[in-house]
Length: 121
Image (cartoon, rainbow, N blue to C red; front, side, top):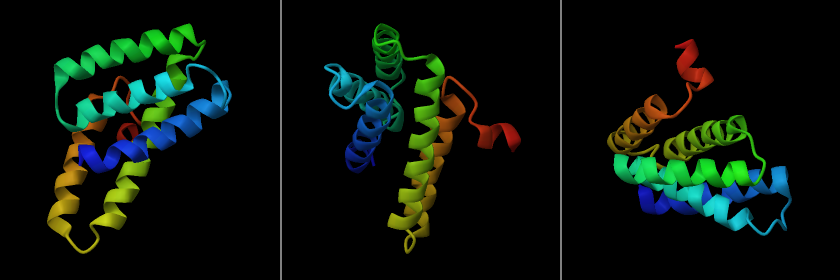
């Protein structure tokens, strides 16, 4: 899952951060790649790598003038996008869809914020 999700995550990060800071910003690729690495660590359930990468992401975002809310909002978008992809990709394989869904639910429970979906549930 971490392998096929990485390009999806990177593309959405590039698009979202590009809209916030400009598509030609010199640090756009750095912050997008860092955020993608964070999600890879979360998917692989590697807490040490996730902590380190979250720290790198927070530092880079602050340097670029991005608010913590913007980073959290992107996490919410990523979670929604990956849930959609899992649903579409594995619609004929409920077991794989369930496993991927549980991975994403575990990630959602451990994000630095509470997604609106979980707050309502």
